[in-house]
Length: 68
Image 1 (cartoon, rainbow, N blue to C red):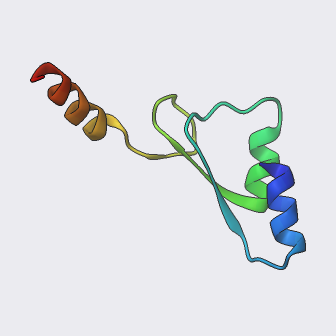
Image 2 (image 1 turned 120 degrees about the horizontal axis):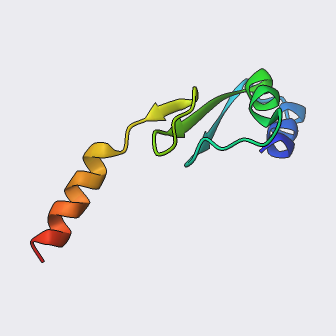
């Protein structure tokens, strides 16, 4: 993600948003990413970057599976 964000910066784009499914970041990866981009992840794994709720979508999918 950091490499992609660097390419976008070099292309002159404004601050970007990096979206991830799980908020798992090695070492200082989150700090480095958040310096250059808005970082957004789902709430599957608790993290400060969680902004996308998944419970409603999962509940719908479970209900559909149960009624099949």
